[in-house]
Length: 291
Length: 305
Image 1 (tube, each protein chain N blue to C red):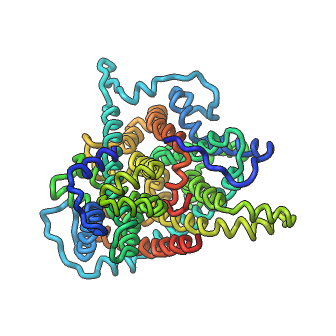
Image 2: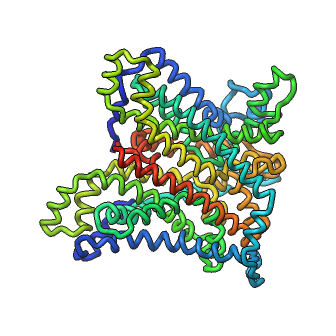
Image 3: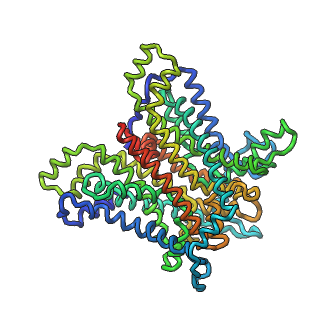
């Protein structure tokens, strides 16, 4: 799935610009480095004034992310963070998968079939993605309480599916719009149904587009805070919300533990993004910037 | 994952869909959207005309007519939040555009290791806003924070970036702009890729000055994406919640309270669901207007290419 990097405009950069670009990259990345370093610092080192750049690394915070020692120091308990990680993974994957499946069908419908008032549909679908999440949550919070779905996996997965759908439809439609219709028309003359055409002709040609859509939707869901904060329960809570529990602790913020969780949580996203970097570009624009 | 889901559909449904009938294709998505987005929205439209508290379901809602709306519109605090939000958007989005443009200018040519360096710049976008917010609040801590540590040698005193309304907003904007300038850069890189190379060669043959080349060749090519970036970031900044919640929590006082945090407080701290829904609907109205402009910009760009 790894795509060749796109040819940037014009010639190569000279040595001056290369050095400058590298420096800017490092400066820009500095806050992230600071977070990762904090994950390896002892509490004293993390809060030292002036802040320390060199120190003896420790892994205690990674251990402390998953374990809690009881007040008398006698027992070691689990914090349940691995459960939060599992929730993040399952909820993000399932909702992105569903959004992609439903989105591909709808995108094909909008791109290739007759829909009366297509522009209206596409506009209001875009609006659904743009409304402030907090306004959408107020009624959902209430409706889930009344129906008893609140706090369960079904509720939060449905919510994320619905919030990824507009994006998936827009993105995938832009990719289908770029395919060459003659191949599809030939298949249609041979008696293929639209579903077969979508599945056997369109989708195989837009693997990169599916990957781009999946990454962006996944990153959004994986990092989302507000929906999870208000619509999950202890059993379905995802990591971003669990993270803030560390912050809210009575003893003050345990920066080391917070940084350790943040670092672990960033790692998979960073890895995916590195290998699929060129797909991010398309995704950032709802598919509106052509390749 | 998605492949499996689609495979199931195609294997279990008869391949007899009428040619050209779009309904079976778009209906599943529309059903989900109606259930999770549209119906709840209609509910909150209704609730906005009542006095209603989501934490007291036994108490019957009381009909108020437009009272929630007229209260909001005549409330100077709400106007202050709209002004705060607007100032934050203007401040943050303009920085994002400038920094994003500089980054794009720096990164649009090839050099060894470009892929890796680009990744460094793109990472902020991939972080969870809660992690960014909480970490920036550590940077802004007057005693332990990095910002204070940098300023202290010059002023001799600890510095509290979150202490005054202006510096608190600047601190918020710094975090927001740091996260999202790379997004603007991505869009501009896409735009720059679309500049036909013959135009640049022609400009070089003509020995056009750098500025002239920029204004006649480069800028027209990226104008469209620049507009998209501006509008999209404006809408997203309007919705900004996580960073405010974790960095300033609206303070000092209510100076960095935005519309989103005000809705949150009204709905989930005070549990005034009716009033919160009314304010939510006002914000949806603003977003619909902004999205309309965004949609138009997309259409214009399509027609241009």
